[in-house]
Length: 86
Image 1 (cartoon, rainbow, N blue to C red):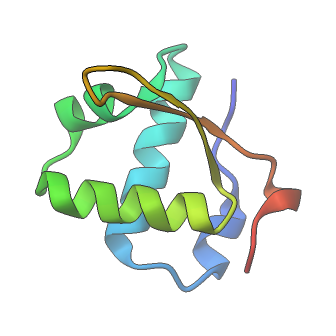
Image 2 (cartoon, rainbow, N blue to C red; image 1 turned 120 degrees about the vertical axis):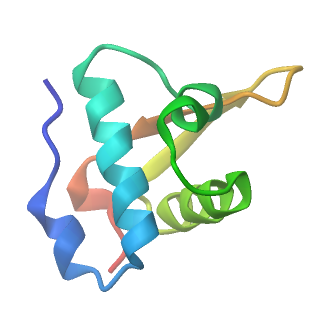
Image 3 (cartoon, helix red, strand yellow; image 1 turned 90 degrees about the vertical axis):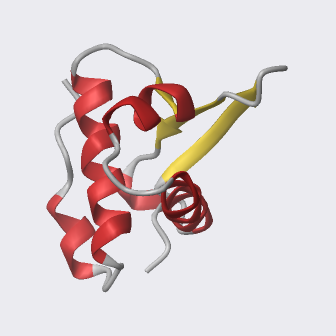
């Protein structure tokens, strides 16, 4: 079980970015890949907003981009909070 880290609320991130992080934690806890395909299936805003939030999480060291396949489905992993950039 991954369990979300409370530090996410101390980073002054936009609400949408925090929401994406929480969805990523939910997927990881359920044993499902953190992927754009899986996230788009549960995300309730625009795909552009999702991609912007994913970029923010990646730039902050919260998510690590593992690979992108030929269908442009990107897979991520959650990083240890010690690697996060505040």
